[in-house]
Length: 252
Image 1 (spheres, rainbow, N blue to C red):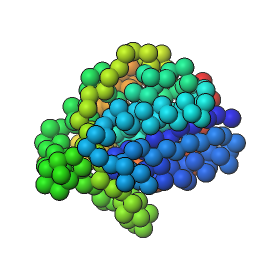
Image 2: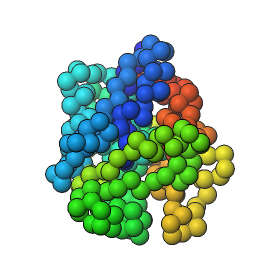
Image 3: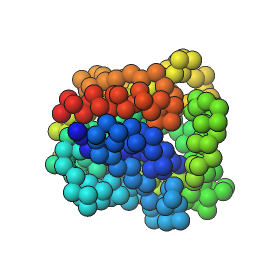
Image 4: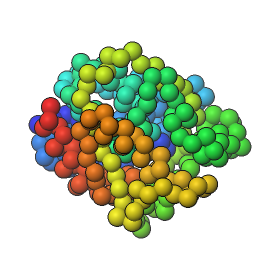
């Protein structure tokens, strides 16, 4: 049996992990799926003061107040930054870090430092200025971009909410304590070939952003897994993702 803490990415919420959490619990594991401040059912707490440190504190709070030990901490997409920070703050509580198609920040990097600058301006900064009072980023993805099929994709996107800009802008403070935590990278590659670079402009997709981090994980000798699924495997292939999570938890 293992304990999992499942952290959602941008615009999402803990709700999106429901199927994965149910499958893990059915397998005898313990699973927590917190919602970060200002998102999901906690959207009413959004404000200009919500930043990356807020979200790191959310996750450390779960580890601390649930008194978790030997936990597998899973971060999806933009929450690669969140789980990296949480591992730095509370490494003694973790068995392993798992990045699911996620960014992998270095010290003093913000999310906006890790993605193309034109994408940042077009999808984060300009919408926040124009529609979010300068601090709230409207949802910048749709089901087609994410490669999510039919009704499941539409239902998923319909529940996404604007994201506090501060969480994307604040550099990640790291002291190095989390470096000893073993790491796994789960690289999601769709059958339609989304591992290939898109052709510029508005065509930048999650696969284009994630690819360098997947390559870096392999170069660093991390445990590396490929999953044939869309960028959000908790929605597109929860069974496949759970199988990988159970495997990596057994690695210790």
